[in-house]
Amino acid sequence: MDIPVEVARAVSPRGEVVLQSRPAADPTRAPSLELRVNGVFVMDTVETTSERLLAQAALEVVDTPGRVLVGGLGLGFTAREVLADPRVERLDVVEIEPALVAWMGDGTVPHGPALLADPRLAVVEADVAVALAEAPDASYDLVLLDVDNGPDNLVLDINAPLYAAPALSDVRRTLAPGGVVVVWSATRSPALEDALRSVFGDAEARAVAAPGHGRVGDYWLHLAHR
Image 1 (cartoon, rainbow, N blue to C red):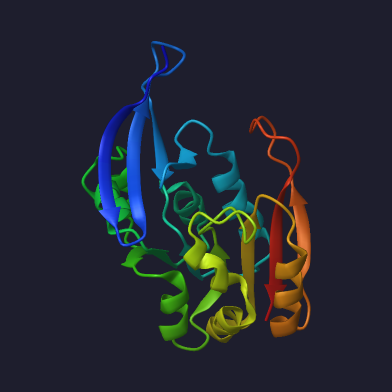
Image 2: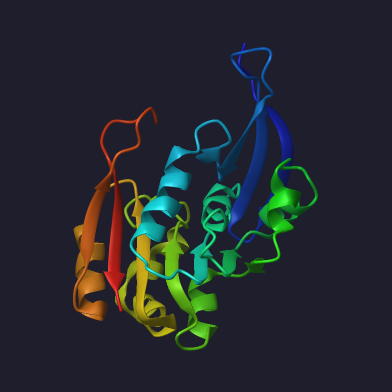
């Protein structure tokens, strides 16, 4: 029977973060890891298509993504894909849950230590909205927000302001001229498009197919250029 085994658990002011192991269908393969926040499935190590597609699609819209910020560490697959691009000189990943950072660093997530060892990578333990508010002007060429599954599929309700005009104004300020913000979403969000237009003057929504991801319909990139 496919029964998950708890690997690690932490409680923060935002609730409970759990990492669990699930046996692979193929007994010759290693078990998968699954991340849940307050009982809600967030991601696992079996199907990482969406995390990788997010990075790939975002990097395609920036000519020189030397300085990148990713909101949300998760299990590290978006960050790893960003670092696979040789144009990236610096990657700041902002993660609000210290336990996730610790589990990546101490090997609880097996691929974590190698990822964090990349000298271009800095992990900041903070709320991404606060980190953006405190960042200097023109700090980044690309800001990639993967904190939730989009504004209409929040992992934490406290993240809702991140997708509204005040926080998006901080994003715009931290972008260098020609820089791009990309928000990953499980569904298209007209409200986010409107908020981006109000701050950036224009915005775009792109459908992104994730073949074999086990869901019906496309994911969406919401993006705007400074």
